Amino acid sequence: MRWIIDGHEMLLQNGNEGLEVIPAQAIWENEKSGGACLPALSTVGLYRSRTVASLICRLEVSDESPFGELKLYFQKASGGPACALGASHRSNHLVCGHEWVPADEEQAKEVLDALDALSLQTGRGLSAKEYMACVRNLIDKSWYDQAFSYDAKLWADKSDVFFESKLPGTFTANLADYQVRGSDWLTMMAEQQLGMILGDGMGLGKTVQVIKTICDLLAEKEDGQVLIVCPSALIENWCREFSKFTTGFEIRRHVGANRTGNFRLIRESVVLTTYDVVARDYAMLGLINWDYLVLDEAQYIKNPSAKRTKTLKEIPKRVGIAVTGTPFENHLTDIWSIVDFCLPGFLGTLSEFEARYGDDEGSARELGMIIRPLLLRRRLCDIPNNLPELQQIEMPIALEEMEAEDYEARKKIYIEEAGALGAISKLKADLSKYCTDPNFISVGKYDYLNTVVDEVISYGEKIIVFAETYASIGVIEHSYSDKLPVFVLTGQVAQEDRQAIIDQFSEVSGSAMLICNPVVGGAGLNITAANHVFHFACQWNPAKIDQADARAHRRGQAAPVTTHYPYYASTIEEFMWDRVQDKRGLSSQVVVGNDGEPDCGDLIGALSLDPTRSKGA
Image (cartoon, rainbow, N blue to C red; front, side):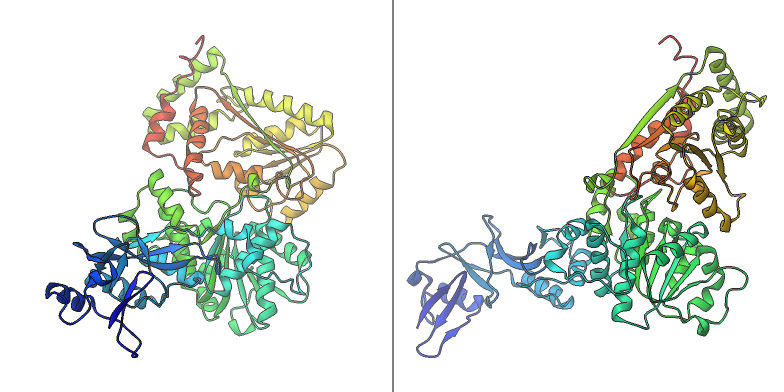
């Protein structure tokens, strides 16, 4: 009878009976009694440790899976390097150097029971679902060490290693390499019945990647059904993209007064509808078990308590896909709301989430690490040599002395009459007025626009001007209609007529101007005929600025794009621009913006700037 050391395990060889696992307690008692029943540890050059070892479960890189694998280690209470356990290790003790170390049996049982409860095995590659189970259930355990974190972006970069890309016969587009990888990631996640967020930046082709993934589904499941929900302004774009990039299956537009109220009549593979229609037709749409439920501009469900959000989360679906370049716009609860649609319960209940995370960079960074498996977010800079350059011009415009005094006088009156928020709204409106309006303050932006337009005309190029008020839109249209063709896209233009206006603008030979309201023209539209963008209206929300820029700076653009951001110096507009830059610090960790309403700190900061004090400085 003698001890056999196999790696970190000590087994007993008793004649020809093979190797036997001896419990730690029996070895311990034998040592105390002087080796009466078993060979002493000293016979194999070991001594008994004065401490116990704890079991550690570590998530590490795997050659078998992009989601890593779990490995077990024993860590002595006295410190030192952890000892890796082989897949066949069966003992509740180990050999570490010249020490025999018993395990903390209660702690080891906790670890093994937790892994069993989640059906997790060690020593092999994990699936996406198993990885998500680790992140959701083990991340806070003292014995769990996540040495490897799966990143959707890294997976997409190396998708050909773990995933065989296919080209369904119904899909006819030629995708860029990054789009192939993105659609493969969507398909891989969907095949494991995991929801996801496609958060690529504007212009990178999120729509066509989703369409490819839908084609992948329908190639495997002929009777599959997909519901796509989007703002009404994007219905036409989705239809055109399907028509352009697919063949062989029908698309239903579930909109308008004549839409069906009978779910049995909805037999098409793909159904397009709007957020407003879903809210009204939930009872009928909820009778269909959708394979995919796709939300375009998914920030529409950022409010967890909104009826729209609750309704969409209740519609039966196998996989939820959120599509948005700005997933989270205001508070970190926006993250919870969208992730809870994609993977219900992954971030806990809303109250649990709010108790753990605050609206700060630290929370954003921590949360960003947790949701990395669910979020594929690539920016223009991540796609080298794929798009022309974007030149951004920040243009502060100083008020003249009398204008500055007028501004300050109005500010005091507006604060007294309407409070801080009302004063900001009134000042913002006044700064956009032209000299024909008795309440105008300055025409500096109009003069700067005139300089830019002259240059655009000299090059025979096109420009998009984003302006908020009908008054400023009217002034700009009247000012330039004699210089070049001018087109206007606002909420007054019927939904079915908007694409025609964009087409007419794009088809002009030579220079042309398209004036857009940011709400109508700032998202989802492809206007690559223009390579100049002018932001006449300042915004609190960096996402709105980026979305507007991406109307021109997107895939399909052949020329460098120049964007202009004019603002009146030392006024609320300069504060708004500075605040936009501050918010971009958060967006580098998790996509965070603002819903357009300033908070208390913003009100104080915006109204503290005084253009009269900046004169002569």
